[in-house]
Length: 440
Image 1 (cartoon, rainbow, N blue to C red):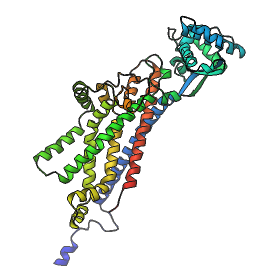
Image 2 (image 1 turned 90 degrees about the vertical axis):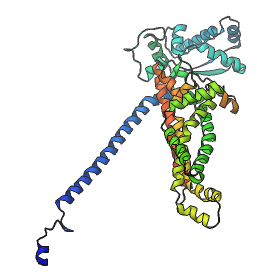
Image 3 (image 1 turned 90 degrees about the horizontal axis):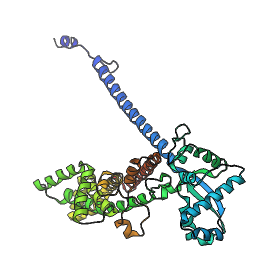
Image 4 (image 1 turned 60 degrees about the horizontal axis):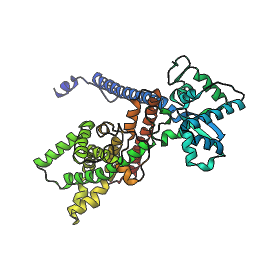
């Protein structure tokens, strides 16, 4: 009976044959892997599209059409210009005369007036006068002036402006392109790498060619110093207390819930809090990197606390038990054994929090860093913290909101510089993690 009953049981499959259910499971697994690969490829595709869009729109900001003209200003011309009532206009007339002479030497004859030069360059007379008043020893010596061209001239060389799209206005006329072509043929207008975009300051709403992001980079640097000096020690100390020393009761549970909730609060709420507390109540200077750093510290603290607590939890309990077993105190156990092992995760979380704060714009809107035009570098360390300044994301937002297409191009270029900083910070986080990582 036993043998007969065993023989009547149907065999589902063997080691060498696969039944229908196994085939179905294998097919489902293959489909799931295919879905994952497709999802990754879609993500990579959009990442490439984003990178190409940013680079294509932002790289032109790193070049600038400039008018380079070398001439000699005599002492008689300098004295005559300084004796005029409209001194800037006098220097502009000298520049026009020198420019006409340079074109004549090249065998080119193009009629133009002061209005055409102002449409192409702005007001070059003020730049020339400031140079010779600051460098009187250069009078009588050959000097090359590199003057940034207007947004429309620069756009003409970059393909953003064409003869078909130019509409005569007080800012530019179609006939000006004849002068631009003649100056380009003479080698007077050229496209060079725009160092001023990296090291310069904002130029206001009327001159995108001279706009730079350098001063805003300094503002972001001082803000990050404030964030690092406050958020790292406070965040790590709070995490160590909550994870290692705090008793487990309803009060600590309430603190943990609030920290998690603060990490999800929109950043503009922290800007409102900073406006109310730091500016209206404490009367700290508006648009100052110090205030911006304090606001971003409030925003970054929950992120650092959560990442630090996760790093402390990742340390095996056996490390603590072994240290306590050989007579170490609770404080010695935490600072001599647990904290060094958690250091890579703490550093990584801190740098990621700083990178997030570096790209924030909304909190800076509320404390006035968007409305302020940063035109000069701070005079010292103290002024770098308390003097009004801007920041990279705030400067990018300001440029993107302006009407001139040249500023829109600058905004894309600023995004490239901001991404370079963010990538650098993430690379530093990876290096520090590898450097301080310990095996147990």
